[in-house]
Image (cartoon, rainbow over all chains, first blue to last red; front, side, top):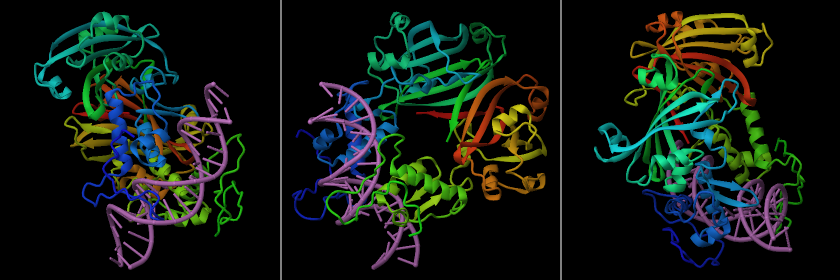
Length: 264
Length: 264
DNA sequence: TAGTGGTCTAGACCACTTC
DNA sequence: AAGTGGTCTAGACCACTAT
């Protein structure tokens, strides 16, 4: 009823004859209907019409809303589920993905114990302050130099051992109310808080991984000798529209633990 | 015509009435038709009926062969393409994926220059000999201890600099005719040779990544001081049926280069 | 022009969850 | 029993590549 029926609107009467209705875009910059539907659904996700953890309308409802067949919204949802934006549950419905539940923890911190087990860890906040972005950070966050950013330093302990040191930069505009107190009291994944409190969902990330010798300050915090081999992990995280919203540098102690990766 | 019509054979006359034919399996261990088709296609790939780089029969042909609708084989092929076993080319056909062409190189060696560019590299063979598997290697390759294996050591040079040292273990049975001469003369990715000469296609792999200090022997070969921080990459590669067919330990020098990873 | 993969529809039925 | 996602079919048409 209330909807943009998308652009391909060659609506001959639906019950005309054996010729099915079909898209019309001639050729230049052709975009399939289901891609457009995918875009519309993404908009609703981004605007907060359906929030993380919530159920979205059923396929038949969406088909009616967008005035397309169920098969077409199905294909759109298929891709969004493959992108980890939606989660399908047979018999129940389709839900907006969230960093809270799921096994979403291991999705971004891929550190396993040598025996392959996924160990729990606790976070110790070292620092949280606001400052002006360096040229490098500004570039990576798509900000102007000297724009306000939030810097977080924290330590992750696995089995009581200091294992990961993180330096996290966030755009100050988006994370306006983020304070040390809020961080200190929060339990669970950082990304879960970001999505719940700031409406910013991390969709994907890229990492650059190197082996480096521990600098004195880092070595001290991780309880290893200076020069000790550490995994250096430079991450940039992106939200809807592929906008970068986090720069993170991590140092991992990989004795007893390893970074796991699947090549496929 | 000549085909296993798969198990779900409740074939009422196709032109009976408005009730479409449908699968019949009651419930326990239910497997969709397209999954069974996927299995049949995989068998043909594994048996060599369609070889890497070759075209496979069209969707309509396969639909006739398996006695299912085009949409069903389409869904099967969709998944096989997502698994990198097949490659679709609109207007041309569907082809068996290969490690030769494509951009398949970067798929397994994810080392990029600091500027993000994918640099070419050359391989220098250090050693290739046959020996008996250690307990550890046997376990990982799913062999019996002391079974014959091939050990390859090689050096990868990026821009003339020794950057990667690899130790590769392969099951001796599968790689019977593999010799140092054959390796030395071969240009291009190792996996391309494996699939062309030994009919063994690497489908997926898992990696365990750690930061380590260079041992003297390794340091010497990589032209770095002993103790220098290196990326240690332990890879196990699998072929059809998730059978492990390669164990590889690599040491990467990550000055000027980094290991790239996408989290999504 | 013919053949291939790609899109879209409409309808039937199945499997799973909830009431 | 009703509702949801999941499977399967059949047919029409589009976009792309070859000839």
